[in-house]
Length: 275
Ligand code: NAD
Image (cartoon, rainbow, N blue to C red; front, side):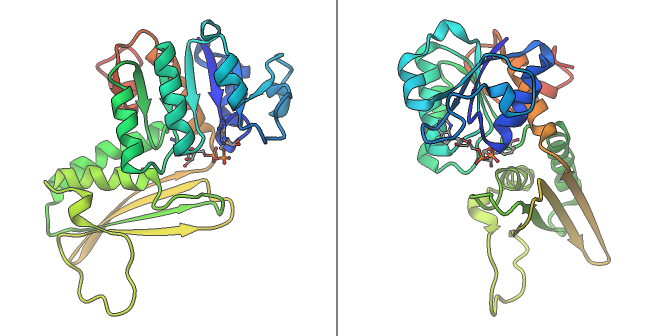
């Protein structure tokens, strides 16, 4: 698979390029794109991440979208910004190319564009590409179903100081999973902040707490608390390699899939050819 990486000089883009330099999952770097103002433009993408030269030079986004030969790649991976990712998704739609989307923090109208685009091309969209986190989603669904409403649910997440959206996309997805298991939605049940005289906890709520600091890659805990006991399901990422490996695995998996919106559970499910 020949891969186009959008956001090539970002924290995630670099991890992905490192893996593609080693032909992870039979995928190789074909095109690297970043915003026009990036100091990486014109540099060999592999040298940028400390690997041997690949002669794939980072291109400016505007130029790339205008000039790229769509026959030169098979799948695109995007870890950029929501407003940029939707443009890239529509560009991939124009060329009928599968799209792996890792960006988080979308507004509802941007989410709608992704849903609409997935009607005509395969899009794998996951706020967290780590296999471990996706296994946690399955555990959380089971726990919420089995524990029932007498267990209060709180979601705590911690990330590095550069993260621009909150709560994290992963925390929100965890919230959606437990909300659905309780026959509700985050719209009805989420509490994103508490301050001052809040009153006693409303049992129907799902609370979120956000920590930002230093270089924390990503910690998530879902707490189920009742009288006399509590259960915590925690995932801690110690580096970005697990997200990048998941994204590359998704890129290898999505080849030849029909149009539609997929997530990492589709990739790791035992009922398909990826395991
Ligand atoms: P980052 O800021 O380090 O990287 C973003 C990159 O996008 C930068 O290099 C930036 O220059 C580039 N960019 C901006 N505009 C662009 C454009 N028009 N065209 C091409 N590139 C452009 O951020 P990051 O830590 O790599 O995270 C990126 C996104 O991925 C965030 O939304 C983050 O929350 C998300 N993320 C998702 C996962 C996951 O598993 N799904 C894991 C980590 C981060």
